[in-house]
Length: 302
Image 1 (cartoon, rainbow, N blue to C red):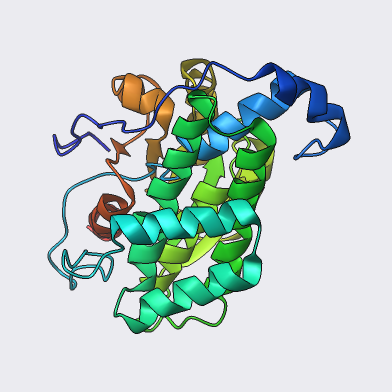
Image 2 (cartoon, rainbow, N blue to C red):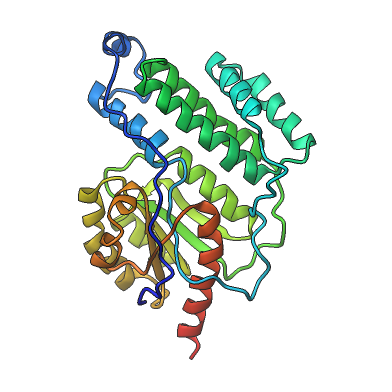
């Protein structure tokens, strides 16, 4: 599908963290936060989770007016305040799950919706943690544990949350990452928000582009595939993967959309690898995915 011009330059508000305190290296052997990996790999993983995956920018196309606006549109008077973010960050760093959940519930009683908690509380707090790491105000271990706590909270506070409209059997999207990526928190958030919008969501943190993804597409019909890459090298590897998944998919008109830091830095990669579109952020992703699905249906039913 040709890009219709709706893709816009993505603004990357995330920071690059290249410094690491020496004492983090010393304590790494005592508490490797992501398992048995080398220190450099663990550090890269954290950078991807916090810097590149909080708001994975995975979808893009024209706005569809045939359905109501997604529920994640923000009410400016009903968002977490700077004081809320500071208090929540302190609770995360203290590792107090019970009080973290209680704090989120308090925000919800004030009328702050779950999407705004995910996007306007979790995301800026995670970015702030990364900035403090860069400034040597927090250690590698402190930031890693806090981000891991955020990941568990996505499950905790989203458990049992009802979608705001019945699931539509035609709204099916599968998320996957470029080979070698380590997506966790960002895909959890975007998957949950798409589910709240009535989409059937598959894939996610454990699924990577290639044979496994192609197997999913051979066995089930999907309207959209969302792919993410944090580096240009990994993004370019998606070119063959996209060609292969189009051949494998039950839906011969499937739309492929991409996002992540690699595309934020160089949006032209999107067309170079044969993707259909590029998103700006999660809220934009949901709106634009509706249009991609509509275009897919129209191509399938001329």
